[in-house]
Length: 195
Image (cartoon, rainbow, N blue to C red; front, side):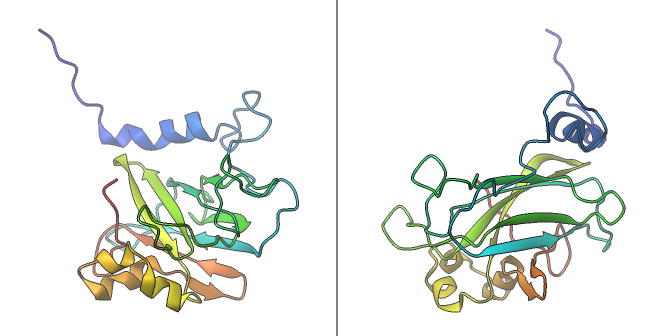
C-alpha cells in the first residue's frame, strides 16, 4: 500500500492566504471582500476597541505571512447565533500587513462569558494563528489589563501552573486601543492552549 507523505510545512503559509484572504492577495471575484474583514457591520452596543499586534518568532523577527483569526462574545457576553447584538459578527480574520506584519481588528470589548460550571470567565478574545511552518493552528487568548478582578476569577487563568506566564496573555493598553504581540518561542513565549 502506498502512503502519501506529509506536505512540507513550508507550503502552509502562501496557501493559507490564497484560500482565506484572496482579495488581500489581489485575487478578486471570489468574495466581495475577504471573510472576517469587518466584525462590526451595524451599530451594536458596547465599547469599540482596536486590537493590534504582531506574531514574533524565537529570533525576535516579526512574521509577515502570519494569518490571525479571532472570535469572541459581544459586550453583553453573548455569541453570534446565541443572542449577540445585531451588527456584530464575533469573528474576524487579519492577514497582517505584508510590510510590518501587524494584524489589526476593529471590534467590541467582550463581556464576561459563563464557564461550563457557571463561573464567569474574564472578558477575553480567542485567537488562532497560522503561518509558514505552522501546519496546526495555534490557539491562545487575549485578556485585558483593565479587568484585574475578572482576570483573577477566570477559570482558565486559574489553571495556569506557571503564574508568571499569565502576563503573556494580557494585552497592553495603548493610546490606540490594545496591543497583543504573540511570541512563538523564547523567554516570553505566549501561552498556547491544546484545544
